[in-house]
Structure formats: C-alpha cells, structure tokens
Image 1 (cartoon, one colour):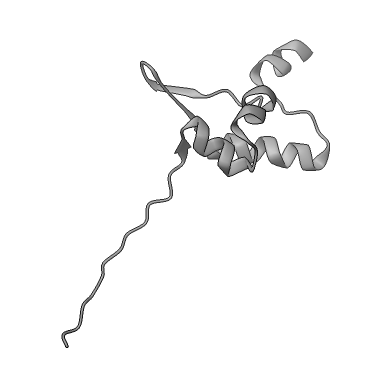
Image 2 (cartoon, rainbow, N blue to C red; image 1 turned 135 degrees about the vertical axis):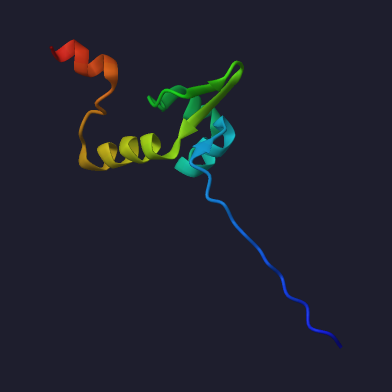
Length: 78
C-alpha cells in the first residue's frame, strides 16, 4: 500500500457573510440582524461583509458592560 500525503491549507477568513457572522457570534441570524450594532463593510457593490475584529470588539464591550464606541456614538458625545 502506498503512502498518501495530504497538503491541506486552511485560511482563516477575516470578513464574514451575514450568516457566518451570526454563527461566529453564536446568535441565530434573526437575532443577529436585530441586535448586532456592527456595521458591515461594502467590499464591492452588493457585497457586504462583517469584520471579525469589529465583532470581537462588540462582544468584548458587552462582556465589560461598556457601550460599543461606534462612529455615531463618538460623534454624539462631542
């Protein structure tokens, strides 16, 4: 029997589709749509993706009990 080698490369995506972002946060997509304050990035017309780093910041802020510092929230405090 011959030896078989598998060369598997896994790329950890930074930008996620809405369903992937919901899975990443552990929320059902319906709940994700209504509660997630993270704004998606329009990578090209008609393609919006969520940045994992922004999702992490939101989750970390929730754990700390802090308000997420969104662009509008920062401007509102000025």
